[in-house]
Length: 340
Image 1 (cartoon, rainbow, N blue to C red):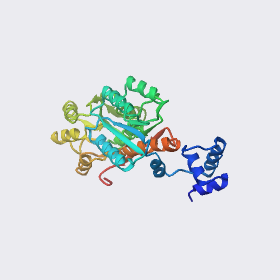
Image 2: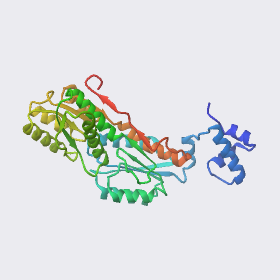
Image 3: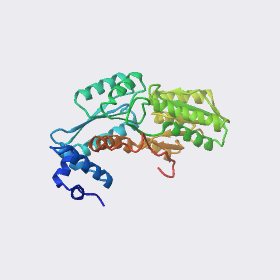
Image 4: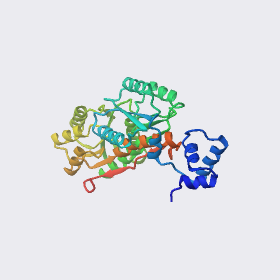
């Protein structure tokens, strides 16, 4: 049963109003009394009501900035839509949420968006960062002043509060294991990566290649090719691989490029024969799973990535609640034609 302000007031020997002022740093309260109230509240496991605390901040609202990169890609557009839904749900007189979508993985645009949000007076920042030393340095500079949460892709050694999203290296490893099952332990495999300045893209490719090298030595991996999240380039890469390697057994598309790969396999009469593993539970991918072009999809939970960072920042700024971990990870959600 939830602890009430009245219970805390009774144990502290003060009024409910004094408890409210002490816990919300509102009005004058004797420092010793305030400390006693906070200690009793902590011992009882009291958790303030988020809506009530936000209402009390109407005159000086919490401001949160969110930067979503690569919104032109199918999955990140879904994340952006979840961010916008969360913005609509959590915006109150006590909370203002500013969203800045960015095309591509562009460090210059990210830095400009960060500066714009800081100028608006944000108290917390969530972003899907470019793997760029300038972005890392800017986050490292901000972290002692405001909490920063990364999502979708991480920014190690930046001082960020926590990361929300997939364990991209583990996603790559899982994909290698699935490919080994599909090919019964033998065959040529093409791995398609994305952009060099996106850590998540590199981690998936590294996870796949490392797992294959250590566990599945009879999978012959062709040199990795990067499509830069471009469907047409992914299409051309897969077509070229099929022409140069008629015995190609499988393709792992680790990034946006799934539609292009499916079109290439269909055009080359290789759909179903060449096994295909992709990411993201989006409508086009689901349809291609049902058609038998994609064998496995590994989803990375757009809802969690679009919602959780804002909630974590609000709870931290309102109540001082730190995230339960510095890495809050999506489940490895594997789908095929039987469960899409």
